Amino acid sequence: MFKSAIEQVRKANDVIRSIDDKPKEGERWLKKDEENRKRNVKSGNRLIDFNIEALDEPNRDYLHKHFGKVFMRLLEKIKINSQQRWMVCYKLGGKYECSTLNLNNIGTLLHQLLKENFISEIEANAAGIVEMHYDFFLTNIKNLTEIKMYDLTEYEGLTMSDVKKGKPKKRPYRDESTLTERQKRLLNRLKQTGDKQDIDDFWNEILGEKKFYKKRSGQFWKYLCTLPINLERYQIFNELNKRTATLMTEDNCFVYACIQAGVNEETIDHMREVIRVRDFPQK
Image (cartoon, rainbow, N blue to C red; front, top):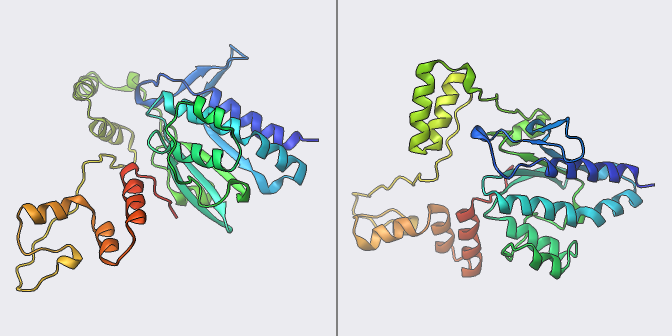
């Protein structure tokens, strides 16, 4: 009776079970299947797909009934390993929305699961995850007609365009055995620095991969206005001093503009938190 929903839940649990809590170099996640020791579950299978609109009402109810346990298993894996990042794409009003699920914002999904009665307070407390008091999805979970969750350690640099085309791209395997001795020495020196961006740039050149900028140290350009007019309302200043430097660095230009437009403090604080954890809805 619930064959279709059971199959979707089983596949999701298989993907979550395959997550190794100790990532390999380059984050190629490999682990022996718990039930079949002869079979490797590889990272290429790391896609969780819930096609809810294809289910009839009994199957949909079954899937919703098991959503809580499935999502909590994934959150616990992310909590254990902070490098886990997932792009969560879902249909809302016939259009795709996307957000990244990672260690910084798993508390938002925990909050929504608890608020919408997918899990109990006992289950939420037992997870050891700090609850964040706003939702992960932009609507109630039961309103969603489709959810696709891509492991970004496998689908590196995945974009919304890839998802809409139905052609998410997995990054090439970073096989060190194919490197020359000179390349191996260079890679080892980069590993000693611990700079992941430099390591990624190295592999980008070797494999011809697309370059992605992942450092979080970028800042907004700071300009000074030399004209005798006051543009502080637009975060443009006539001089650089302690006061203006503070105004330049406390908030980015978008938040600053919202403050000047009279957006209430509660909303401003929420925006700051969304920007801090980099949990942006993507279209």
